[in-house]
Amino acid sequence: MTPPPHLQAALNELLGDARLVAEPLPGTDLKLWLIDADNMDRAFSPEETRRILEEPPYWSFCWASGLALARFLAEHPQWVEGKRVLDFGAGSGVAGIAAMKAGALEVVACDLDPIALASCKANAELNGVTLAYSADFFAEADRFDLILVADVLYDRANLPLLDQFLSRGKAALVADSRVRDFQHPLYERLGILEALTLPDLAEPWEFRRVSLYHAAR
Image (cartoon, rainbow, N blue to C red; front, side):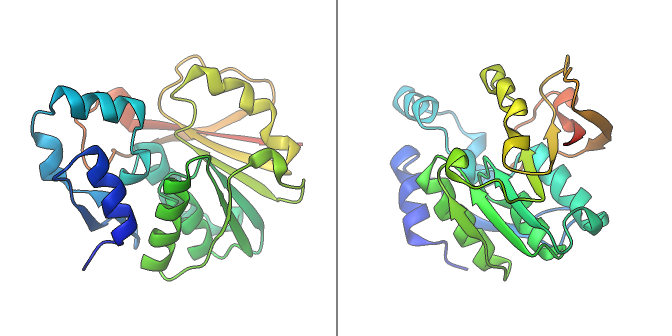
């Protein structure tokens, strides 16, 4: 299967010999275009390291929290069935695609990165679903039943966004494996799920334990 040329080109600008491959996600019926695992095993040059740090290709990975949330929605479709959903910081689009597969009425993949939105579109096509797309969360109307959020709180500067999700949706589901002192009066922890990032980055075990939080107004 040939990867989308525009996504392959974007990846090659960062890592010259990296390839995108259509990888099945364990525990799901989904596939995503992901960076090939073999490429992650080699040493990066200083120039490659600089480029990756300046423009991380988040969209070419399936992060643990996104995978955990996708599995949760497949097992509990009532969260999204017949609902209007926005996937915030969509990255590869895995959570939004899972929502559509679980019966959502509409899913908007929202990401600031245009390459991420292109990745969402390619991955949606790979999985036989259709998404809508947005580059500006705050330009969206307050019309969503649910905001999905996975792997956004890795940067603590994003924590104030927890107050904003309910400005555009009636409820929010937040999956996170990074914040150990998560405290917010509106959010209740539903449980802890286990997943790993693909390709495997050999992350510490603690980052494979994904907490799922829910808030509603």
